[in-house]
Image 1: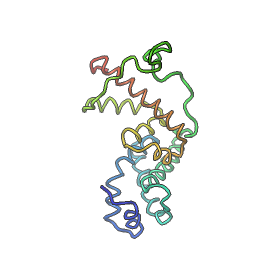
Image 2: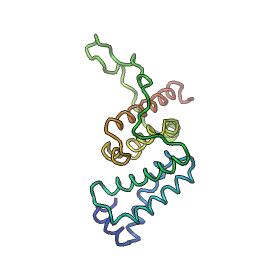
Image 3: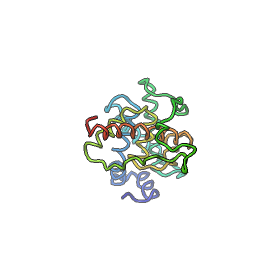
Image 4: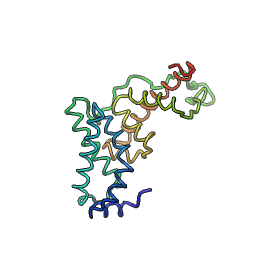
Amino acid sequence: MLPADDVLVAGLRSGDEAVFASVLDSWSASMLRLARAFVSTDASAEEVVQDTWLAVIRGVHGFHGVSSLRTWVYRILVNTAKKRGVKEKRTVPWTSVEPDGGPTVDPSRFRGADDAYPGHWREFPEPWVLDGELRAVVGQALDELPQRQRTVVALRDVEGHTSEEVCAMLEISPANQRVLLHRGRALVRTRLEAYFATGGAA
């Protein structure tokens, strides 16, 4: 567990190597995963993370605490990764949401208007406990998502960030974040349901 932000910021500003090492150890793995959503190779993602930490060290004296330190660091990461991704011709504006391709879940799975509970599930989706094999299926499903969906789902469901943090990190609106999260989750769920329907042979 990391100390409070004011302790971390003071340590970073004073050049405390132990504080920097603790933050580096705690956040770098998730930062690498997030960076990878924007760039084409693992090596490029590693460079993004390195550039981000350099920018953090150079800019920490200008950190005003408007957001959490982690949100501030991740916003720097996203901006750095997006710039590199643009150079690699892999990114599109975050403000544009995927065009509506129809419902993300088959409407027949919900109760009709004449039902006592219209709009509710006909049958609740099965809960899942992720073992190693299922984690691989989820990982593959995430890899196949459009970049913006993948990033939001990874931040919310893998890294555990709140919707407010994700909106701040990616500089997107709450509505945009909800749409991306909903569509991404729906596609991952579809992949998992196919996996279960075939007895794990998907």
